[in-house]
Image (cartoon, rainbow, N blue to C red):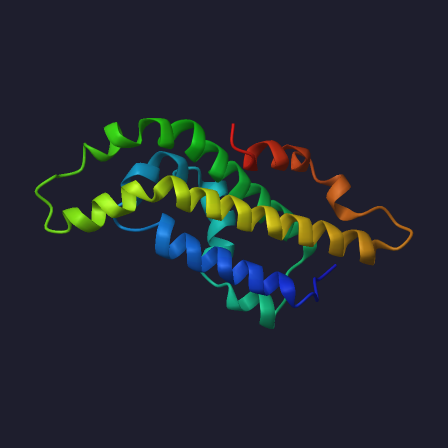
Length: 160
């Protein structure tokens, strides 16, 4: 089923803009390299972050969108578990003589808050997609019930 809800491409665009402008910056990408080295995770995330405009013009299959949401939820979870607790140590490994030290320090200082915003946007997209799925599945079983691992999304997106 291809999603025809105009609110979903808007949320996807917000996620893409926020991720590209606040998470995947040149200052933070080295800290995320280990997480983003997972090819499947990176590919699914880039389906949203690289071309969000295609969601509005071409639409997206609901099962594919669930997998992309799941990838973002896993990313948030791994960042919270592996990067945020060690952020100061990890960020100290970057050259401190960098001409953009102020920008790097700002990116690092706001990283936790920006991950929270990303988590909230992914959660909003998930809730909206499930509502659309339930509404348009009619008497048949909603798609989200057949995708393994979706039940973990709530746990991945909630701060521990």
